[in-house]
Length: 225
Image (cartoon, rainbow, N blue to C red; front, side):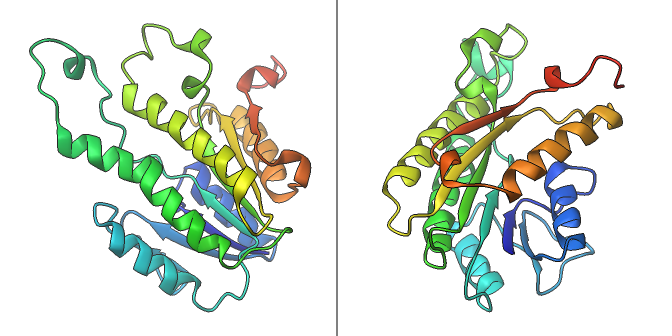
């Protein structure tokens, strides 16, 4: 498959691990990152996500040689203001620049790049967003997590974007989202979750379109560290 991943450059994180496995499995993987890594080349570029047109132009350059994009994965999470208690008390001040950046990263840019990706898609192709249970399951919004207003709220908007694209994209492409928690501090558990998410994203069918697939740590056997 021809796979394009947005946000797959940081070693030790899901996006990077996904790209590494997909490449090992023989797929043509293209990556667009927020910052320049030593691995950057014609298949791994970086863009300034504060400049929307730079992201678009780098994406077009990255994918210019592809006749078809089989899988587009948007897994970047940078930009999630407001995300701390100080942003939510009377002595705080609203940071409109941070708000706009968060909206761009979580909504405007995935919308823009999804439309560009669709130009090279058909019914066998897919778009995948990475979401969070915080965006739709209020039962897990404990006091500890309620400060993550930007992350949870804008992922909620992204969920609706996913469902709208699933229903109305004119190429018949599959559009879905994955909600998971990658337990990087517990490698054995992380590996099980990673395997399940990778399998889901690389074996999508029409039955998955418009849906959020939950892949939770509590599905893991208790004896796994």
